Image (cartoon, rainbow, N blue to C red; front, side):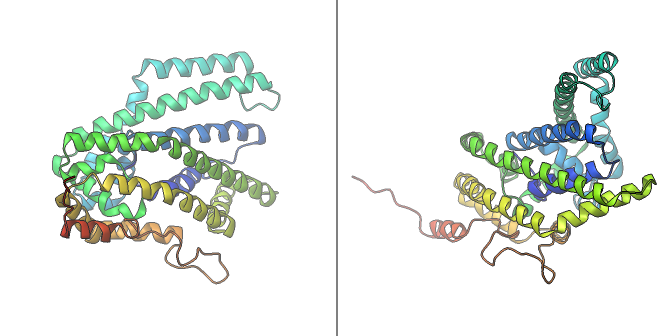
Length: 356
């Protein structure tokens, strides 16, 4: 399951795409392999968020934001130790090294995977090896980050991270059982929360597939637009600036905004079901503490939420831009409609067991 999202949908559709297009635009031969690699990486990331392994990666990303780092009192030296753990884990892993050797052998046998005349069979082999490299790299990164975070953050800093996850719940469609540890949940409660995520996992799988399809479509849209507008541009820096500008235009376009809205709406039903089931596990004391963290977030959390909303354009729309209806999902609705009132009434009027 996930920790901080910003939201997971936004991170995947914005962050990962930007990381790809900000580099050199791939050739037609490169695109199929790069697209497949990104799909596999996204799938692995979404699965890791659901089962809890991906939380450490997102914390590491957060710690590179000065507002968050300073907000929970983490030094730059601590961040450097955490972010440096990932590359070291790959260098010291025999299996990862063997996969790299396997790729080099395939290149020696078939030539570069990006050559225009490489066979279809060889291309499939390259893609399959690269998928295993990506999967192993993701696994190593998650484990190394988790160890580095636990070793380099104090117990008070780790507590603030989980409090931030709860304060930031308005930006997350899905919740992580791990964040509730700051509410002092029992071992039995933790088991119940894990069982809930297992029960809803098949539905989440379908949602993640839709998210991956949307990300792939966005990337293809960016490449196609680049092909139209890059004719005659030979300077590498100009090409890089053009790809970033096109990505920004695509992200702000009506089709992308509409796709994002539809994805968030489709995830809302699943997210609400997950939240309600998890909230029902909490005691009244835990519930009240959680609500207080949501209603009274620290200043740095407010600033980070505001930054995301500005980037996603949810604080308002420009004239002529498509916008969701007034009753549609929007950030700032951390608790499903009606549940807060129901829960508060339950606390005021405890249910009495009736004898038969």
